[in-house]
Length: 317
Ligand code: GDP
Image 1 (cartoon, rainbow, N blue to C red):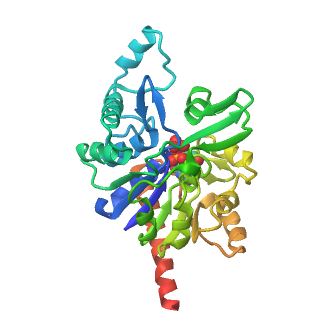
Image 2 (image 1 turned 60 degrees about the vertical axis):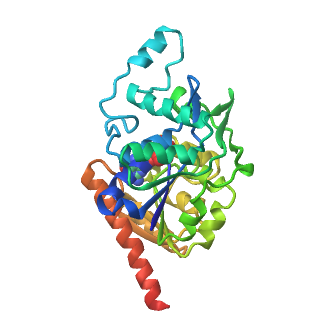
Image 3 (image 1 turned 180 degrees about the horizontal axis):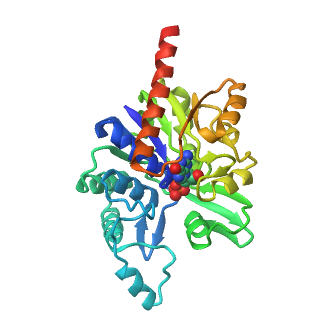
């Protein structure tokens, strides 16, 4: 079993590669829910949606979020009705938010709802929210605390970041299956997702970090930072705000207590040499994914690197 920890953008691209090279039944995806929000009274789980859409072949690759070919009639009309429109939910996307909200209101858990929607859309891999409890990423700025979507989507991550916290995390429980999927995995992969606000909330759920310490599976991460900056989005800004260097070394530092291998881009070959001196295994690959082939190649490279390492470790045992 391969278990992946992920957010919704870089993570969805990576999962798009994995689904091309391994059987979906082999794959368990643990997804960040710190970005979840109530939008027009509906429960939206942006990262779960992106992962569900990519695994069902519905994700808009141009936008990197939402359903491909979607229309935006409802959004347009809500604007005419004086409602906020900064979070761009398409019409087919909204159907998923409506169904999720309906099932949650009926008393189902987020895990149950996620499985039900994924099944309906033909997804064979297992998608697990990190927790069924509400954990909300809060970004402290001079304007006050913002939700992640307010900081990122509404305000284009322009505000100076003073603090980051995961409200509710201390009392949250991992969703059913999360700990088991980590402890019993052959391989645990951290997608090239934002280490602070995508992987960070998952690690903040009590028991998850301990499970990563305990697993017998090899743990590898793909760096979302290439040549000293994020491929997209605010990962660099957020890492710096937490005192981490914006580099592959910073990514290694964020995961230092459990990581076996870091996969870095070809542009970071020199930094990789430097990082190896710390004793960490570092694999260089082409990590910037533009085409389906790029994604499949990266997924294969990661799996063979991490499996090769497992075989080498077994030989030495
Ligand atoms: P979010 O939930 O939308 O924040 O999505 P993620 O956390 O999964 O993805 C955001 C991260 O993906 C950013 O830090 C980007 O640097 C990274 N990213 C996006 N595309 C790529 C890519 O093609 N290669 C790599 N290595 N990182 C990427």
